[in-house]
Length: 319
Ligand code: GDD
Ligand code: MG
Image 1 (tube, rainbow, N blue to C red):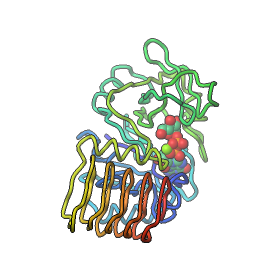
Image 2 (cartoon, protein in one colour):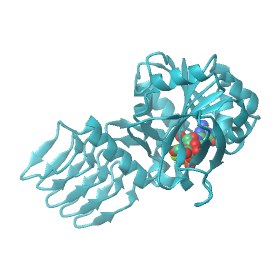
Image 3 (cartoon, rainbow, N blue to C red):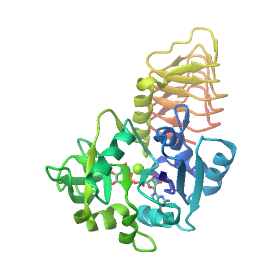
Image 4 (tube, rainbow, N blue to C red):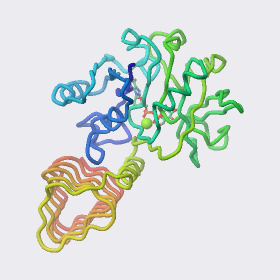
């Protein structure tokens, strides 16, 4: 079975970080975002197809250098084709029902279970669904009593949404879906879904967690979710003086001197947090330095960035 990962977006909401790396390669706790998806695939998925465009060379390089235990094929779009166009662009690799993923969602969804349900319903597609308080930033669905999707609204105005159930960005489709995607730039959510509602498009609800990592706030929420779901760890760090580490953190190959890290801190290889500094609800990526007495809160600090002595960094992305 094949899995397609839509990985060609420009990651505009994670700028300036995504000026130097594509969103799927943005580190999230212990590995790039896209690897959390690949590692969650059921055994029967033997090929991963990445639909790429923005910074495809960086993705190519990553998969050349890292074996992820499955065959990985990158399919490029010279100009981004949208989520539907990107899917159609990989159709020559598809030979049966397949998984498709937005490359920036993280879930506890049991994919084997979703597949069993999809097969039993015999529809053209199954969309994973998750309930949120404010659905206006997402695709919103209306469903019938037997979980058939009868309304799909992409990013409706607040108040216009038919429910609080959103498209969680994990799909299973039959190859028949390609017959409903025109050539060129096509949005799966705005053009294709509304058109195939009568063809057996079903919703699949699940328990556990779901986070979209496409904005600073949601990225940090995803980080904290992963840290409290078993990924908190300390590997090969050096500590000098009294270092306080409240809450769940992931610290790898970094140096800490008389500082406070945590809760919800991730500090990467070769990074350093100096005397009197505080890092909480933040990521400090590889090789970045947090100077003496600096405070980093609710922020993403990109690779190699230097936070000066006494600098205060709050609710921002620095790269
Ligand atoms: N290959 C390719 N080409 N991929 C693309 C393109 C493109 O032109 N445009 C977007 N993508 C990829 C992005 O990289 C991302 O992984 C995924 O498609 C979804 O795009 P986003 O830009 O992240 O969309 P969104 O977050 O605003 O909304 C989508 O996700 C929500 C859940 O997180 C929609 O699918 C919503 O309906 C959904 O609720
Ligand atoms: Mg997104």
